[in-house]
Amino acid sequence: MDCSLSEYFKKRGSIKTIGVIGMGYVGIPAAALFARSFDKVYGFQRDSSSSGYKIDLLNSGKNPLKGEEPGLDDLIRETTDKSKFECTADFSKISLCDAVTIDIQTPFLNPGDLIPDFSALEEGIRQAGRYLTKGSLIVLESTITPGTTAIWAKKILEEESGFIAGEDFGLAHAPERVMVGRLLRNIQEHDRIVGGIDDASTKRAMELYGPVLTSGNLIPMTATAAEVTKTAENTVRDLQIAAANQLALYCEAMGINFYDVRRGIDSLKGDGITRAILLPGAGVGGHCLTKDTYHLERGVKIADEQSVDFPEGVESLYVTARHINDFMPRHMFHLLKKGLNRSVKDMKGAKVALLGWSFLANTDDARNTPAEPFYQLCKDAGAEIRVHDPWVTGWPGIDIRQDLESVLSGVDAVVVFTAHRMYYQLDSEKIRKLSGSNSCVIVDGRNIIDPDTYIRNGFVYLGIGRGDKNSHPL
Image 1 (tube, rainbow, N blue to C red):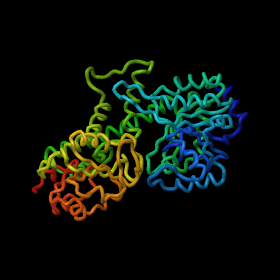
Image 2: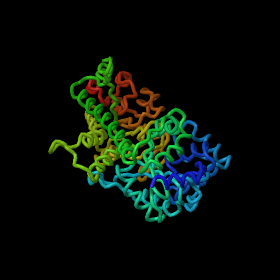
Image 3: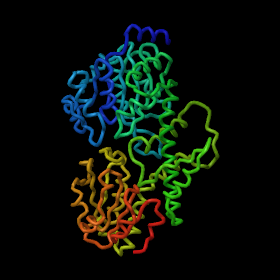
Image 4: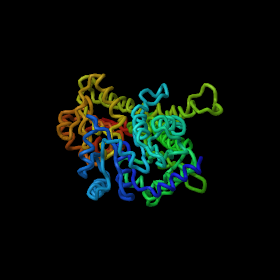
């Protein structure tokens, strides 16, 4: 089987033309980097009412992604000016491609049932299958349930193409490992996991990614192992964040400073000693950490292998971590209620300024933002809540403003949800004057303000993990 596919790859020659399906936070920078290293790249994007605008923007050399993304604007302009990158809704051009990568979101609509919404991904795979040619390579970069590439995706591609994966075309999973705000750097510098359904597919996929890497290494494995690697690395990070969040809640309850404890723990050095603790916060958002645990859990459940030997009646440690991180916006709501009570104000009718709607600092990425459940809790309690974000300019059903002074004017409370750079420069005296209150509440969900400065200026301060300050004298 491998021999036949290897011959097709050899006959086709080196990879020259690449297609990238899905022009989002992963597909756009990936396509731009491919275009710098290969002859031609097609970025495939549906001409839909919600995303079709990206086609004209990209073809005019403009970046549709907002926020601080070093180098991406220049690279898009450079590759379009040289006619090496073209965005199109014409999926038939997949037939021109030697390799096609697929970068489409894979959310869980209801994590409780462990069934992901693969509808958009399925359509992307079917488009690839309709137009793929013998000797081409298909690579799924989307984070997916372990087992998806070698079983589900393979079946769809074979149905649509009439070809056989592993004989007529190559198939692999090479998961993206990027963070918004450093997309280009991550793609070039992070090691790249490459997992084919066979050795020939793995080798061909390594030919695709090798030219893009500047310092990262290629790590070959099977497709399913690659799927587990991506879901597990995000699951473990989510667990580490949950550990920090739980410790912060404990420190609050005991009246001590989490950051003193963290510094003390980290001071223990020596061979074989690792005590690093991540930072707590107002909640975990984004497309990856909020759902990859469920992909991993589902992979275990659907695997046609032996059952997991696990303590009976004990919930998964990883799922428990998800519950803790999902709780943090509610904890922010509890801190706000406590602060308003201390300033002798009711939640009902309180005017609240929510600072930061994106889940990550200095970007416009608001997917699964933890600010949203907090916002809804406040609305349900009768509060009047205003939202400010310098990067997110719109969200369904939410009025998001870019004028910070109008958001802060006349408020009873200020809640910092995102560590945007501009929020580090907040002036306590100016906020006090804008609020018009001598006992304005400020809740810091990212530990970016100095509690003592605000307390001296008459604020009621509360912060995650700041048990030493959360009951300060008024």
